[in-house]
Amino acid sequence: MHSLRGLSMPQPASPTANTSPGLHRLSRRRLAGQRVVITGGSSGVGRALAVELSRRGGVVLATARRQHLLEELAATSGVSILAGDITSAAFRSQLVAVAERRLGGIDVVVAAAGSGAVGPFSSADPATLRRIMEVDFLAPAELVRLSLPALHASPDPAIVLVGSILGLHPLPWHADYCAAKSALHSLAAALRVELSTIPIDVLLCSLGPTDSEFWDSLLVGQRPRWSHGRSLSAAVTARIIATALERRRKEVFPGWPAKGYALAARLCPWLIDTIMRRRMAAG
Image (cartoon, rainbow, N blue to C red; front, side):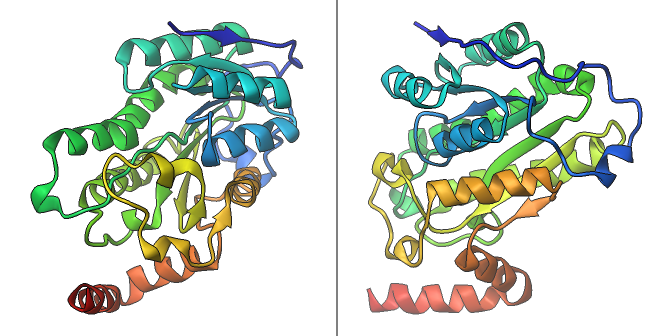
């Protein structure tokens, strides 16, 4: 069963098609009144983003599988909710239809649902790989595709993809997750150019160590030691992402650990590999 909760909402700007490519990029995005669809909204960064974007005036529809957590979110933040599995093609279609009906259109799509696993690839269950690819790549990609007609009609559209620094350079014991996030990063880069003439902004969020429920719901394994160092809270991460969206950034790396890893991944990826080999050898 899918459930929907909705509250009275401010009227967004008239959703006429964007006919002035490039002009909107000269100004800061106004989140007030923007109609936002967020996946992964029941916990972690997705929930924090739903709260933060709503606080900044966004008209938010949040989705996730756990209805009771969504109901808590709706009660405390005033966002609308729709419970369901984002890996279901039927639910993705329903989500877009409900957003257009309830919100009057879609200005921003935020793909924040995520799933992960930790362990050697050689002994991993193929079902784990399929599930991670479905949640972390295929579902966001298909949701974006389904949302494009609505985004095309928006006066100031945007796509926000929540990725990971492991999509920049992979780490051992995270092969499934790294592969999915690398695919998501490539999708963001391709869409940023492909949709630039409309234009639709594409923001890629490469998260580093983050304190969220993500680690409590791993499909396999336990939270690795590297993820504990100088972790950002989900709330701080959401504020950084929301500001990057307002400023029309193409990519954001919340926190100095994420920035440092991204720099190393681009300038000296061999160093990351060397460090990981030594750690693996030391047990």
